[in-house]
Image 1 (tube, protein in one colour):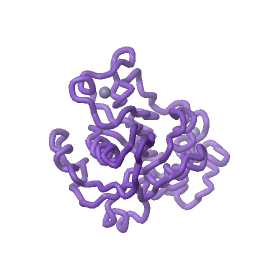
Image 2: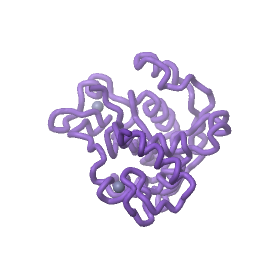
Image 3: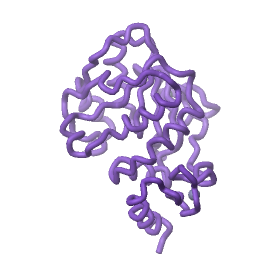
Image 4: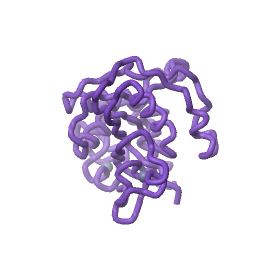
Length: 233
Ligand SMILES: [Zn+2]
Ligand SMILES: [Zn+2]
């Protein structure tokens, strides 16, 4: 049996145990966290990357794409590469409702965070998708961030007003068009630094569109805080 299979089996077992005494990745005792310190240390680090979009670049310089066509957001903090086993953790939260992972992600984000933002906004889900899934994984992570930093959370600061084809089902070049007009800001963000929380960043099209709406609602600065950065190799 491969490591991968045995890990998924372990997922199922631990899904019944929200207090998670065993590490999700290695099965060793992990205290109150779902990932033990050794496995957390071994998650795939993001190499030197563009400070704006978190795409790997030599020496961490701003990438060509951000220079040529600056996105609406100002900075991105990504914890890990969206690769095994980080991808399994992110999927366990989103698709297996392993909500105990959200505080772990939040704690890791806080440990590397920019100075606390004025307000935290989770990437909104469309109400239909929310009804299907029962929770918004970005909101679960954002709650932990708000608790730990003291920054106010605006769970409904931005709303998804248009249900789009899931970005993962579209080629990269069609994603920006697909997401255009999907959000609506319900709060005045005038002069504020807004931290947007999401689980995975791929092309950045969804985060860019949300940042556009937040800036239109007055935000002075938008910073993305994401668990994982997907990078084509
Ligand atoms: Zn472990
Ligand atoms: Zn960039």
